[in-house]
Image (cartoon, rainbow, N blue to C red):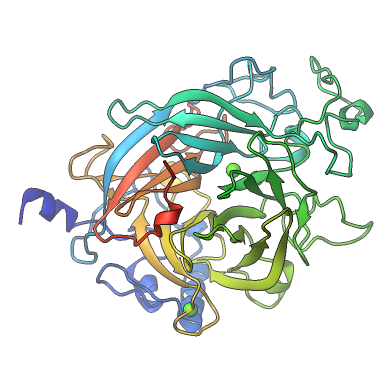
Amino acid sequence: MTTTDRALAAPPPICRRDPRTRAALAQAGWTRAGWTRTTGRAAAAALVATALASSPSTATPGAGALNADPDPATTAAQSRLVGRSSLPAETYRPGSARSGYFQTGTTAVPRPYPAQPVQGFSAMHRNADGSYLVMTDNGYGQKGNSQDFELVVNRIRPDTATGTTAYLGLQFVLSDPDHHVDWTIWRDAGCAAATGLPAGYTCPARDRVLTGWDFDPESMQVAPDGTFWFGDEFGPFLLHADAHGRLLESPIPTPGVKAPQSPSLAAGEEPNLASSRGFEGMAISPNGQRLYPMLEGSLAEDKAAGLGSDLRIFEVKVNQDLGAQFTGTYWRYRLESPGDSIGDAIAIDDHELLVVERDAGAGPNAHFKAVFTVDLKDRDHDGYADKQLLVNLLAVPDPANVGKLGAFFPFAFETIEDLAVVDDHTIAVMNDNNFPNTGGRSAVLPDPNEYIEVALDQPLGVDPRLFPAG
Ligand SMILES: [Ca+2]
Ligand SMILES: [Ca+2]
Ligand SMILES: [Ca+2]
């Protein structure tokens, strides 16, 4: 056994002071060999009960609790950090208008910002040359504070040799020149009708550019025909755009699901999905004929039925011409704790996904950030997609100190929203820094957008059609 082998054989448990630690995980059916787990309803319920019994708010993580006391006996080697690269927080898109008038800013970064921040990466697509298309969400997190944030896809190139990610430029701004959106958008009558505009902000000349007041995209897939699919949180909708970001068809609503921002919500009608709990992840099948948008939060009816840890993964059939339909099929995904959220979902073959699951903590208050493989085949027939832990993002083994943070690298950002496959043994992960928020790396400085590559000791078995062409 080499030094590296020994180091790799000693990753810590998922988090020592997480209430959901060894006992709870064992109770929930985790086995020690590689933390392999098949989710069972009873096991999951036990885990939830245990987590609730020891609420995270009663935990005392304290500074430096992350990765404390790695326990070599409990886990097997699975992953290793092989690259890290960072985009400085204050990276702005050249030529874009000042932004953040409706936002509060921070002491470190007062608003309005000199231009539109590049960050807030909520989906990524790896290109064949190793660069990425990155989709920013609606900007500042809410409909009411993101009116001056244009919905964009940018290009970046992480460089794990230098550790610095380059901003390559704008891919496109989302727009609706053909009026597929049949309700008022901010830049076409919305702004003109608004009252109480913030000081210094003037309405742009009317156009069909889409902003964070109109939609909140959190997931993106590039179809084999080169068109783009976005999963949104305001409908929640699916949006279909051409390679220039122009909507090709009307936003596709989700049958039976309405968020508080849904434009079709009737007076007095109650939404059945909370704010910012829409399509946080969306996978595409290897043949491009199915989309699997995944909600970030549970539906009101599931909560009412005691299934507050259940998320739904929908099946959507993509037509050869325009249009796509929700087929009516969905899968249930059981969160490890009802307070968790998912951050992204991508496919690795025609029935398996990779999913990021996370708690709401950052830095020393982060207790659970993980990548799971998720099998939609439900091989144990318990009604849930089967989950298996792939990477504990709070303690990625880093024997070579690639991340420069010690033997176990913490990717302890609040929101981790970007997954990609680099090759059959390597995945890439990025955070959404929620610019200009702090907490992942510093209590006072805005978080950067970090990119990491994690090597796996077992091949993923990725369908070759899911690798970038070219
Ligand atoms: Ca986001
Ligand atoms: Ca959002
Ligand atoms: Ca199952």
